[in-house]
Image (cartoon, helix red, strand yellow):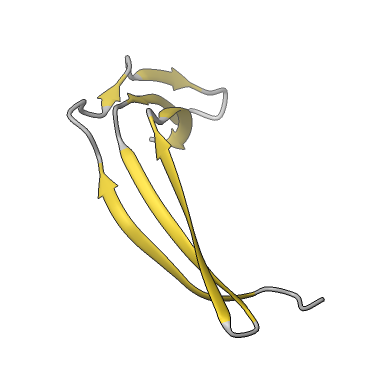
Length: 82
């Protein structure tokens, strides 16, 4: 039995969808050392689509395996010194 070898990885489609990136309420904090911090939450719920295909080689044969991801949801919050 032969082990498959990845011959290529292709990005077939990148569609970011129709929903824009949303920034939540920006919050500012003061610390004890008289420094400031900002909290900036980012939310992105989209109808984005990403399709990637991998080509595997088995001896003299090749197989393309496509994978598609849809409806990506991202929620992220970051603190940064002001």
